[in-house]
Picture 1: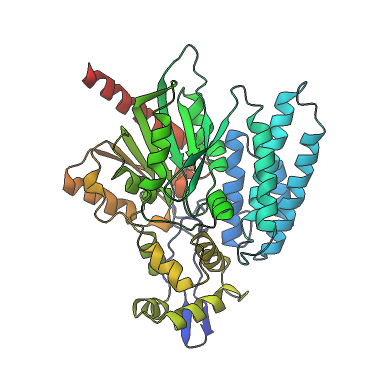
Picture 2 (picture 1 turned 90 degrees about the vertical axis):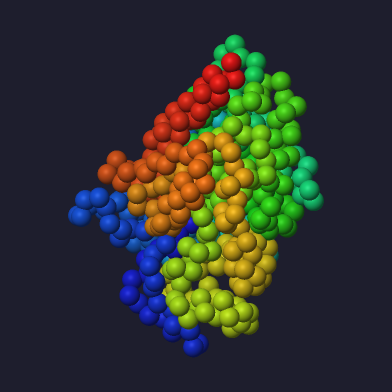
Length: 452
C-alpha cells in the first residue's frame, strides 16, 4: 500500500466536485509531527512526497541486499518530481546496467558477486514498474516483470541455500510461492513463517525487507502472492478477493507435505494491507500458532474516505457510479493532482482488475476485519508506526476489538525518534525483525512448553 499524503490547502475544482485536502491518511508524508516538534520524521529524497516515500521504500531494501544506497541515491537525483515516466526511466536504466554487470560475471567462479548484481537488477526493475499501471495494456507491465523475475531467480539459485519457487493450486487460481529453507544447521523440522504483502507489494521485496532477517533466525520462510498482487494479477488477470483464506489454506496444505516444516509452529505475517488480509485468512485457517499484522489495518477503504473530499465521498455513498467514475478518472490524469491520489486510483483499478473507480472502491470495502477477529484463537501481534498516518487510529481499533473479545494479543508502537515510525517500519527493518521475531520465538517456546 502506498501513500496518499498531505495535499496542503490547495483546492482543485474538477467539474462540480471540489478536490480539497482532508486529513492525511498515509504514513508516507513528509510534514508529519515527530515526537520532537522540530525534526522531520525522515530525510526527504524528493520534493514530491509520494516519490520521496517510494524512494525510501526502495532504499530500505538495502537491509537485505536488494539495493545499493549509492545507486538509489543517484537515480533519485535524476527523477523529476511528479513525472511517472521519469521514475520509470531512471530505474529502468539502473536495472539494465545492473543486469549487464550480473550477466558478465562468471557465476560459478564468483557466485556472491553475480547474486548481488542480479538481486539489485531485479529490485530496480520492480521500482521502474511501480508507477506505470495507469494503462493496463502498457506492454512494459509484462516485459519488465519478466525481467525482474528472471534476474531474481538467477540470484535465488545462487543463495547458500537456494530458494525454491513453486506454484500451488488454489480455488480457481494459482498461487506462486517462494520457499526459503532455514539456514539452521542439523535441523529436520523447523518453525516456518508464511509472509504476504498487500496493496502493491511483491513477494520478492519481502525477502529483502524482513525475509532475510527471518531466515537468519533459523526459520523457514514462505512468501506468496494471491489475486490482485503483482504476479497473479499479471499472469491470471484476477483482482483482489475478500476470501483470502482461499489463498493461504492451499499454501498451508503444501507445507503439511514437507519433511522440513514443523507444522506445529507456523506463523502468518501480513505487511501493510496484508495486515488485513492475514487476519482474514487466519479467521478460517486455524493451523497457525501466531498471526502478525504489520500494521494493523482495520479497513483501508475507511482510511481513504477520511482523506477524500466530502463531496467525492458523498458521490460514492449515494451510489452515483457515473459521477464518481467521471470525477476519479479526471483526477487521475490531471497533473495538478497530487501524485499520491493519481497513483492510488491507477493502482486500485489495476489491482482489482477493473476499469471503474467505483467498482474498485466498492470491492475494496469488502476487505476489512469487521466480524473476523472473534474467530482467531492464537496470539496476535499488532504493530504500528508512530508516524504512520495511513493507518491513523486503525491499529487501535483492532486492539480495542481484540481486547473486547478477550483475545491474546500484543501491541507495539515503533518509535519515530529511532527511525522506525514509518509505515511497516520502512528503513528500520532490523528493528521490526528484532521485535516481531523475538515475540514469535517466545510464542513458539510457550507452545512447546504447554505441549509437554
